[in-house]
Length: 455
Image (cartoon, rainbow, N blue to C red; front, side, top):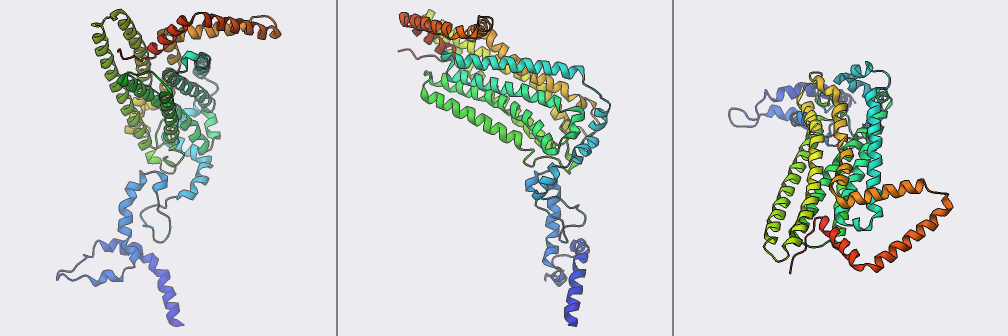
């Protein structure tokens, strides 16, 4: 009975001595001078020998994603390391309203937002710009959908880019409406969804441009017309764009954030980990450089082929085809240049955010202007399409004029009759002019950047 009480007394005192024993491990050599193992280490519990290895992981795990943090609080945890949350605590962290206030206060944005009251004129202006972005991208999508000759891989990618621009305009509108004092009414989960959706739209735009570059390069390399297999490849690339964009934008809500790790928090996005922002800007920069290299390669291939075609019999026809291919290539290059010009200020700001210490760079508190310039890229893409692509411009104007005339026409019950007449006339015209239809089809192929190999 006495031995059992003594054993329990030692078990209660033993954990309190582990911290002292962990400090003494470094003082005791693993072997004595005679080469024999020091028997004093055998008195330590096995858990105490793991403390040193645990301490070595502490610094690395502070900067790792949440789902890599396996440490728990308890008697086996080192006394010099604060208890760290585990994955089951995600739910309580993501529903705690105080976390938003704590992080904004740490980065200095709480004081910045408290000085602003009411609706700013710039916010109203940004919302109007977003409404324009949504409207024009909807028109681009409708133009591609209604025009059958645009049902080709190149225009599928342009439609995908327009869809990502449409999403960017809608998400940025929601971001503006939920910013300011409304930010402190959000839970961390809602905040991460608000900001993560912007990263999804950005990622989708970048990956759409990369998919366009890959599709153009493969087409120019094989010199073949689009067929069913190319369409399948296009849909696979578009699906991959959105899947990767959703994963990249969802990493913070899956755990790669700085909740309860304030010293790793961003100033621009107070709940985002600086390592995540650095990784995103690095990935986007590498992708943009890859796109530029692909288009430089395509331009070299087109120039080489156009020069070789001038020495053949149909030099006039070949040069016309080369001009159309270069025209569409120029369109995509302009889109890429506009993207780089609009987004590079935000990339530089995020890199500055990673390098600056908290409350030291005042320019980080003006991030909404850098983001607004980036969102303007979503407004420039449809304008670039309609100004540089003749077919797209004609179809766009025709659709807008038809919709406007339909709205200003007579009663609604007369519209089906007019539509039927127009359809019959179009069908008869196409049937009576097969050569014209065939020529239009050939022009569409050439304008999409494809060149047939001469026999």
